[in-house]
Length: 276
Length: 292
Image (tube, rainbow over all chains, first blue to last red; front, side):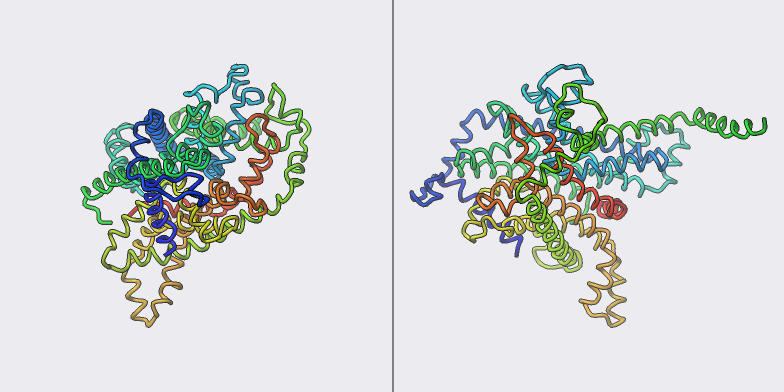
């Protein structure tokens, strides 16, 4: 019921708002709402900025997903090769990063890379280089923060998965003279495939919807909106410039893109003959 | 003489072991280095919270402080209503965790143990629901809250968070309920247990690790949220939550870094404590969820 009320209804409303002309005047009841059909969408699709933001979102999310998975898997394998003390140290550090709220993580990373008082510029000898000024360096900074706070989920899950693989299998592979990389590629990866699929999909969903980090670290989308991603773009359109229907239309587009990803995912699951 | 050799013996052994297993040593050094890098932002946050103002705003940041002070914390707690914000955050997070754990447990049991029409459709809906960009739904939710007259109340934060944390919680818990053998259920009924008794006294303790793992996620999403708080608590700031308090100190042009770091520390510590408490169950829980 709660699900129905607070998910289905807003999604329905989202679709509804996106086909109406809905701005501040309609919200306060000053003007009647008018039906626009797909007017909002055509306005959106003919807007060059939308396409630019869409491209940036896809590239940024892909970069986040790939880096998070690479770091997470590498560290999970590393965890299985070390003794208790280093393992505990890494585990605790990762849990700390995981536990950090997105908003505090964002401000702390900003402070670390601060042009005037941050230790990073100091160590790298960059003087007062500003990381948030350039488009790519700002995206890179956000990427670092996103990877920092999301690799622990991948690491812990994959580590738990590796632990579930029987030791005999790995020993047999090692005895047959398989190299580390070979063991990972030919033995572990296939056995971990269901887990890897789950963490990949979760990462795609999360990274495609990054909001807080971009909003806080680039001050709501960067200079002249250079660091906007779809999510922040929709929010800015709706709440900053009161174009609720345009914001809603962007939301619908995002939903459709993620739906397409889900369908591919379900297809893959089906092909493996797994039942939901 | 004998003392020296006794002392030297293990050291030689250790050296020999290091040489024999260079791979493991390298791995352990790497692990410690990575741990240090990952923990560094948190260390810097706590450190900066204790630094006096002059040291924070210095162009020569040092990784220690000569004169730790509580000035930043005093400034934060002295801020009007800070205790209230904290309390509001706690109320919202606890309410969301309890409600979503309860509903998710029942729902997960229903979708794994019973075969009914639309079951697969429902499962796919749960997956799809996770895809919905929460930020985009803020717009219609804002109107829903306004129509319900719930703007500026804590309900406007609790209800959406329950709704948004449920799909993931049910999706994850499913694996745990699946892991409990059905023979156990039959045995319980044969022994004369009622359905409710089986549910709460047998199934519930068995899937508790899974519930803990999912609760971590709902706790974090509720505790960290700043979007709903920013959008739905528009005029009554006594209903605000911690992230909003942080933004008071964070002004884009001239941030009060000491204050920001102090609020961040206060905000992060409860989550850290929660994590460390459930750490063991979380790791085993995640393992169980993905094994099926």
